[in-house]
Amino acid sequence: MAPLIERYPRVVRGTNKSGFIARKKKQEKRSEYAISQTTAKTAVITGAAGGIGKELARRMAERRVNLVLVDLNEDALKAVVQELNLDDTHSLIVAADVTKEEDVQNYVNKAVEKFGTIDYFANNAGIEGPMGNIDEQSVKALDLVYNVNVRGVFLGLHYVIPVMKKQQSGAILNTSSLAGLMGAPGMAPYIMSKHAVIGLTRVAANEVASYGIRVNAVLPGTINTRMMRQIEANSGAADQYQEANKAATPLGRYGEPQEVAAVMNFLLSDEASFVTASLYTVDGGMVGQ
Image 1 (tube, rainbow, N blue to C red):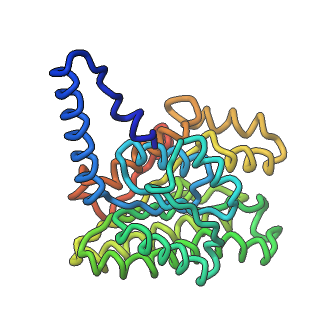
Image 2: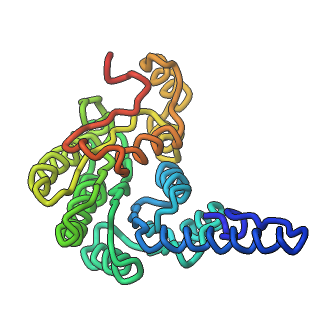
């Protein structure tokens, strides 16, 4: 978030009268800013150091939302803070392993301690896991993907929902995947986990609607992220895999992280106040094939 002085450029003083007007305008702007911060919203974003998480943080910072950025990689979080020019007053980074209950409880507690509320929750952390047919996949790989992509999402819901219930309001967005609607071979742990996230989303939405809490899921398709590069590499034929994906996408290209973040930003806003239990695909039309 830009420093206050950048958001409210000073008015150049001229005569004494213009100087008085300039000072008055500055005081009014400061007062407006103080009021906005008194009622400022707070968002928790897991997987915030990744491509999509970072772009969501960028968009929410533009809305002057207080940000709690969560990721396993603390150095990467610091880089995000620097890139987005976030200040300590309106942001907080928390290194956390989303598979560990104590880590999840900690990032929720720290968010509430610093900002008082959690208005928006982007339950976004996830991994892709190895590729291979079911009979070739190890149980260890299955457990790792399941723990991050399903247990991590469940734990986030488990600890954030009570905060939002107390507030009688909130918006939650779980990151699933287009894979959650498909059964493509070679990625059983990942696809299974993303189907599970859709199920969790629907259950949670029905459980908390009476508390004024909305729960939705975003389902990205092939997006230009580190995860997609890794999936391509794991396929053993990255170039061919990429071209096949583009050919299967009506728009004929990969999406960009900011295109997914734009949809997420909408769902985590009052503009989506009548949207819950919904699945939003951001996939260039692939779901329609």
